Image (cartoon, rainbow, N blue to C red; front, side, top):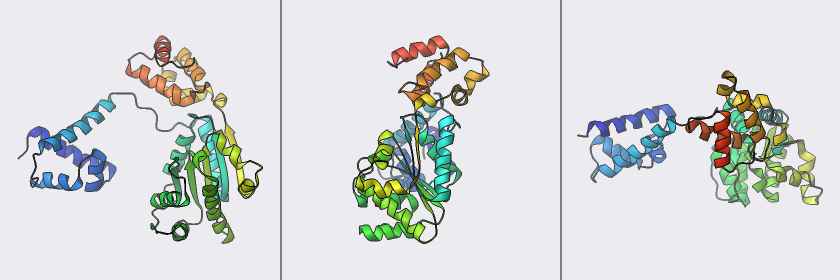
Length: 307
């Protein structure tokens, strides 16, 4: 019924479903096609011209195949800063209450949070804040969606739904938390207080830029309750990045004794570009098939990076 190439594309869809443990609709959404159309194609009941459908599949898997040929960064490296942030989250989970881990962009804060949730999937939840979550309901709806709580219509019932879904010993981690409003922070504090009043713990860990700790440690009256309940408040800077961190992130350089290249990437990492900038630089140089010292310098100049 279909060509060999089309059947191969359908087989790739099935492999993707199994690898990611996705439903028909979920895998269709990932690829950019309708789950219903996918079922109809597989059953030979697709009424429209299937060529556009198969073109979409081919485009998706073509991108993924090209991605395999590019540099893939290490998913997580226990760098100096990421290990400390990981421990802040762990202590926040154990003790409950509020904690803040903030600092320069691109130093490994998000990676540490992702690693913690990967290691503790049943009782830790990572929520990335953005400026759209600027009222109580939008924030609570996002939390409810993340933890699997019932989506209620009113704010107070939504709060109760979330409180009932969370369990003793859980931790909520909010990345990019500098975007949270004062009211939002108070709502999160109230969830932690609710568990504390029952003799239980709920950790609320805020991760973000320097504004995060400045606001939550301020002397203004509206922050007094927040500041009093913040058990940990840590600030991390890109100047704390160590040479060993570069070795962990780029083991190929250490294996090949490329000391000059390691030192150069360390210099980049200690600028405002931080570890993220060093990773982007090495990735581009690697894909350009020249990650020698000269290749890194040339790529840094091409990227207009501070060196």
